[in-house]
Image (cartoon, rainbow, N blue to C red; front, top):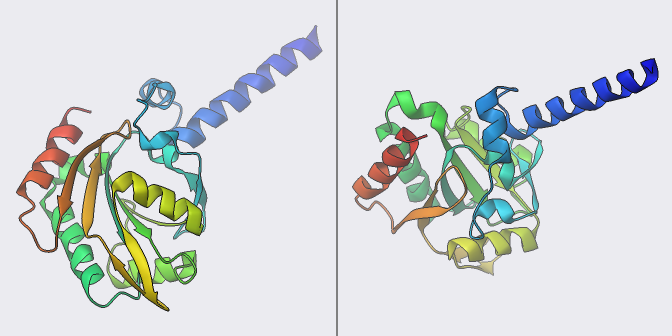
Length: 204
């Protein structure tokens, strides 16, 4: 009898730990409900690929569930479009009210995973002052990156070593992983993007 009680208690502890890891917000009731909430067939959280972060952690996209995601694909050695995309991301971050800071995650995905190791991504994040908790950099294997780019309708092609041509798109996902808005171009008016982020984050 005591052995049965011990096993049940252990299983309960493991279950609680799993919920905490998945949500990143402890074992509160709201976090648990969010982690177990179903997603649509179009949600990016259905993708099962693994990614490396700039902090050296391995995650799946569903580990980002629960926040509005602002996503862009870049590579750190880019000298033309990417610096402007990074500036656009920083501008967007600067216009989102501080009260919503914890509800939004800014995600930069490398299209050059061979060069952009977690160490390189961390160095880049620090240099660009994008190393706060609201920023996440991702490195995947080439197939994983290509799959995700297809989901975002981002096209890219290596034209020489460490040099790519690519689409310039910033994508917004709701906390369930559904695409709700895209901003295309460099240095464009980001009013609609900001409105989409604020409106979605304010309802969570």
